[in-house]
Amino acid sequence: MRILITNDDGIHAQGLAALEAISRQLSDDVWVCAPETEQSGASRSLTLSEPLRVRRLDARRFAVRGTPTDCVMLAVEHLIEGPRPDLVLSGVNRGANLAEDVTMSGTVAGAIEGMALGIPSIALSQAVGRFTSDERDDFAAAEACGAALISRLLAAGWAKDVVLNVNFPPGSGDGVELVEVTRQGFRDVSIRFAEQRTDLRGRSYYWLGYKTTPSRPASGTDLRAIYEGRVSVTPLHIDLTHIETLERLALSLNGPLSRRDDP
Image 1 (cartoon, rainbow, N blue to C red):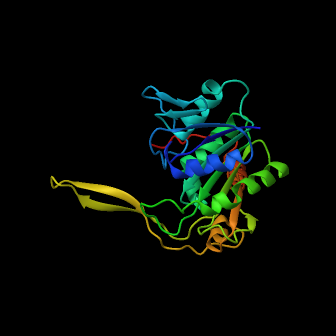
Image 2 (image 1 turned 60 degrees about the vertical axis):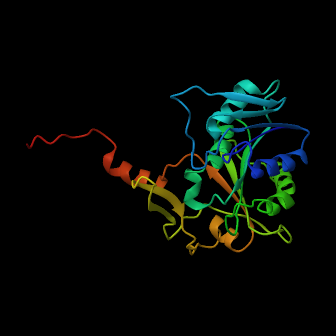
């Protein structure tokens, strides 16, 4: 099995090293193509206004000055020699990608690009208790059960137009045995904020961040699973159409559009 791995935290991220270790438990044919610098929050953005620069670090390892989507597209279409990958893995992201976060996540976007190119794809993220400058123990849960979980997912299979979004709970990895297939949740509180600061020249700027305010998620959601220490597996579909609203609007809008002549 040929595996392509990418991420949005950058080529030097510890989560990418963790994913490479996980991948090598599944195959000896592993290729790496990741952003040169961190691209968190890049979603499915493409680099359209400047050239894409690629550094070949070794025979099967590339750094791209671009987004996760750029990386997967270039790797599949140009950089990987021989057959296309059989599987795209994106991550392991430092921090969960849950609920509405998935629409902004570069990690999820890397998997979506793999799916768009016809390759089964999985996004993997590791929830952390708190962010510090020391990342050494952050990926313990993903490393403990990542390879076994991916093997089970491959055996089960999933639709061609679906990506799997996997989130591991924080902790040492000991006792992380429960897996739950979940639906995408939606937080009942807003956790994003912009903090106004002043630089050394007295000018204002803003730094975006996240609050740690917990949500109250419903059972069966990705949020609830992670809150309760389970691995969450969420099948995501790129079709964002809301069918109920489509059907309701179609009853009143389908047909010729009448014009009002009133001034």
